[in-house]
Image 1 (cartoon, rainbow, N blue to C red):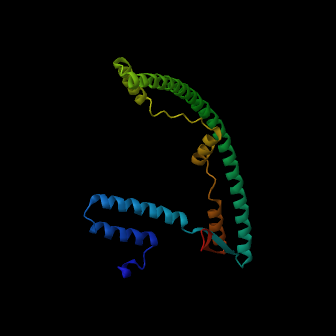
Image 2 (image 1 turned 90 degrees about the horizontal axis):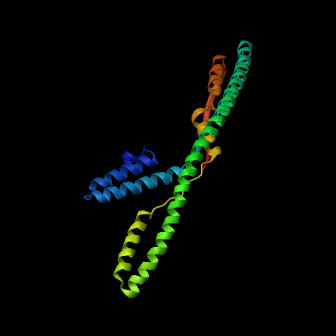
Image 3 (image 1 turned 90 degrees about the vertical axis):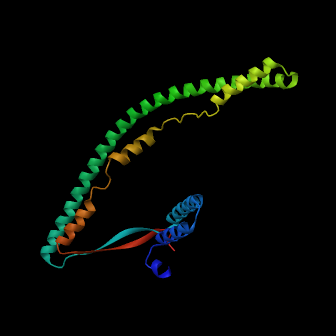
Length: 215
């Protein structure tokens, strides 16, 4: 087992061990519990695992022809970024209008649901008051009518047991969600620049740098 796990990632090793232990387990319930524990452990490891970003190093071309071509690479990158920024500005303006329309629709729905919720809460308060009254009479006087009414109100209260107050929509959150799904922040300008840099005779290398959860 040790030899088989040597070249595996930590998550793969844990999963491999889990599978071996699950196979030896005769009860399906044990396997489910082990699997749930594995998922939680995997999520914990992912949260604590180091986070890296790729850093690029550039070595310019030595020839004059290559350096001349490299100047054009920078010009093209600048133009690409300008087009990208303009495209994002227009996209965000459109997203703002769309968010406002969607917010108004959600706000209308929210107010309707809130009105229903408030009505049911008032009804619940009234039922609780009536139930408490008849229950006390039922217990103290053993009154059959009071006991029947208490049972009836208790049944109606069960129907209103789970009431959830609706959440008021947030226009900024709606806007942010639309931007994330519709507007492209990265237009690939850096990738195009690196390709141009290499074609001009330059050299591009990359390496990873830890930015979070580093040892």
